[in-house]
Image (cartoon, rainbow, N blue to C red; front, side, top):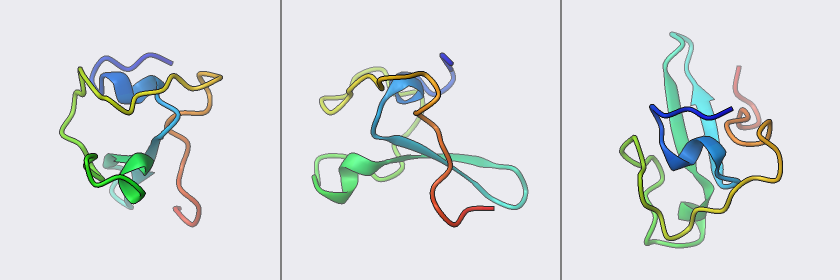
Length: 69
């Protein structure tokens, strides 16, 4: 699903959504784990990103990180 409020992260294979108990949503960049050029939680919306790679399916981006309730 295209989410204009988050920009490129909405369709990036490196993006994951984390939600807290209050329902707030935080978009995390997994590229940041191995490449210091990327912010772990980028300022949204992201309009340009050197690491952006479109996910194979629209269901993949934004999935919850393991252990999140």
